[in-house]
Amino acid sequence: AKLHLLRAAPALIAVVLGYLASPALCNHNVACSPVSFDGLRAGRVSSLSSAPSPLSVHRPCVLRLRGAGDEAKAEAAAEKELGNAAYKKKDFETAIKHYEKAAELDPTAIVYRNNIAAAHFGKGDFEKCLEACAKALEVGEAHRADFKDLARTYARRGNALAKLERLEEAIKEYDTSLINHKDPDVELKRRQAIRKKEDQEEAAYLDPVKAEEARQLGNSLFKEGKWVEAIKAYTDGTRRDPKNHLIYSNRAQTYIKVMDFGSALKDCDTCMELKPDFPRAYARKANVQILCKQLHKAKETVEAGLQLCPNDPELIQVKAKVQAGIMGVGLSPEERELRAQEAMKDPKIQMIMQDPVMRDVLNDMQSDPAAAQKHMMDDGIREKVETLMAAGIIQMR
Image (cartoon, rainbow, N blue to C red; front, side):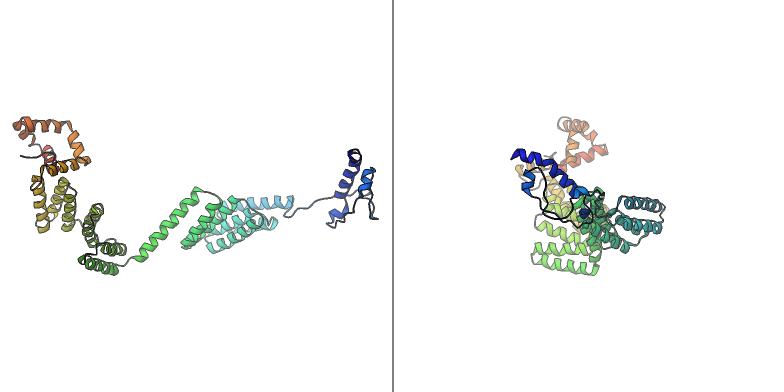
């Protein structure tokens, strides 16, 4: 059987080649005649039809594929180059005409549709740009365009939507673009669109009247001991009016109640930035620092506040509390030691302790009181010594 098949192979190949060259195939009207297997075994081909053998017909066959031919593609590429030249000159109308001609010559290529969209974007006609992008995506998806080309189209849609202030839609287009192809520039534009959208939402939320209403609500909740709810009300007030210093001051006091000293310090600092001559912010910050066993910092805060408001009764009261703490009134030896250990965590205290000059001063204070008095005549050294005393590092007995 193998021998018969080998003998029949040349005849079988001839039939296949003749079939491919037949007019029937070229005219897309193929009629396949069954081949007798017995004939193959005998070394010949037998056709059950009465049609002449394709081997007797010698006609060239051209297989035509869907899409533009080579000549049309070349013309399309030439039109694209003309469009690019006009685009570089910012002659967008002329560029669009050339790109549209290229798209007519090669309707399966997404690149020409993308170029049309780019030209409309350059003109500032963003709606036309969106229309051109929609057509480009239609062509690209129908003809399996490269993912980079699809990503470029989605990104351009995002750019046009961002120009039209349709930021939420723009962000979605950027997301789709990045799914098709990662591009750092598109990621940057996406972040910019998100930031701009958030800024617009914040600006739309601003309302000083409602901010004051939120502050009053927070005050009522504070008096009822509902501190968490009060913080929420104050926070809403800061969003309504981020420049209202009273809201930050009130929220700082509420944070103290819930023992969130870090947030309380931040709110005091914000309040002081918004209104530097507001004494209550200094007093509350100093109180937080006292609670954190940072008497040296509380001393600095009170002194700064008293320079602005020397007669403020609240600041004067806090100053007395700071001085009592520095002197260690009512503190056990263990509490004094704990205060000194806490102070050593402060980078400022660490720098003072590592200063060679201050080391000599501290040694003199223990062994040579006269020399220590001489050192105290220097303003810089005296300030550092007072800081160490306030921190509990130096204790007077």
